Amino acid sequence: MSNSDFRQGLYSLSTKEIYAEAKGVFQDFFINQTPLNAFKLSITLYHLKEWIEESEGSNNAAKRLVHELENYEFYEVLRSIANTSKHFHLRRSTPYDQIVTEGFMAGKSVAGERVGQANLAVDFKSKEVWLREVFAYVLKKYADYFEDSESIYPVEN
Image 1 (cartoon, rainbow, N blue to C red):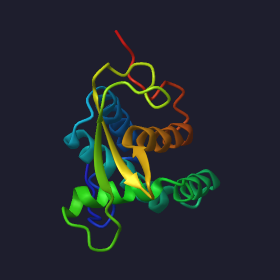
Image 2: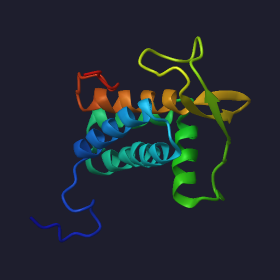
Image 3: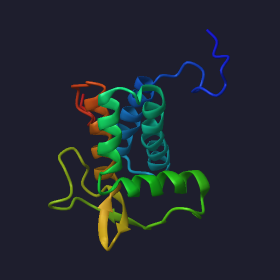
């Protein structure tokens, strides 16, 4: 197997494989919200849109996905987190104050979260936005696009 066009993708990696990786990392992040998991997930989720746009962008489903993601009110948060992961200091996009909230919170926490776990968030336009919510929204859009009917959330064994 060879990919002689170095300008196209990474070897033979497909958008569906990247989605599957993002789903696995999200499940890790859901259980253990560490900066490293946020790093891996933000970069994967953010750049998957570009891969879909470049490789499948001529189909209507891909166009609709890109439109929905780019018009999501907190997509800017994902872009900022991904760029912070990539550059350390942001120069071209807005960085947001980073927040760590400890514990289960009524109205914010969801089933499956552990009591006392750390929840990573940012202060976005004077609103505390949890990264889990942003990541889950974007990942669910990808799940719909790839027609993945399995839950994006971890399943207890």
